[in-house]
Length: 326
Image (tube, rainbow, N blue to C red):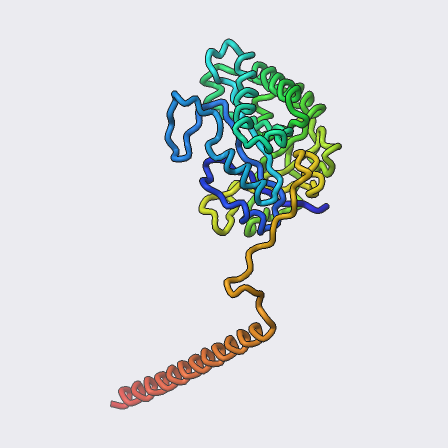
């Protein structure tokens, strides 16, 4: 099965040049849109009076992704303890949807309708959930309500969550219920060789009820794995932070359908070299010849160094013989 790489990004990554992803053959970039907690501005400052629940880089990331010719996706980070009071769980569920929809409304008009697939990131920390006095049953009920609410507002819903989180915070009944309604995006990290996992054929674990079979069609995703996030430490030349990298088995045409962006085009080719053209055969041969000359010079230096070393050893032995006779 062919797997295709893509990245997901947020304000933590700063200002990004999406052409760098296009140059690597990526067809998709998924950007954080919103969070149920207050977010910083582009300078990392918090202004709680501003009620910023949208990612400060979302509009730039989404627009630049589309302008580069890539498919753009959007995700929301779900929280189960905001806004207060905790007793009003219906309001908390509703806020998750409202904040995501508000972030989408900030996009230029021509892009708003393209966000018809919502990705729900469910991985809130145990420290926060325990501090709020929340348990598996209440979180499971809220998670199901979130999925239901988002499905009423978007054509497709994808659950981003690791089995390590769902096993602890969601009941098996809840994840099996989700597996009948949505696809899953599983984060499970492996050691890297360059930017690739050491075992590209690894079968990630997934929440109970889901299959770790890759979805290959936008029309046949339910219960299957939309993507595998295999690292949060990818390195892209020109980007000075770690990048989350993922595999999906969905070809570009299926991504166009899933994200309602049939107008997306292939990424433009990388810019030509500064001289305006590619490397000619003559230039390659000249470079090889120069390399051979340097190798010859290096070998000559090594031979000379070896000769000096041998002569030094011989003189040392003669001196020792002379001292032994005196």
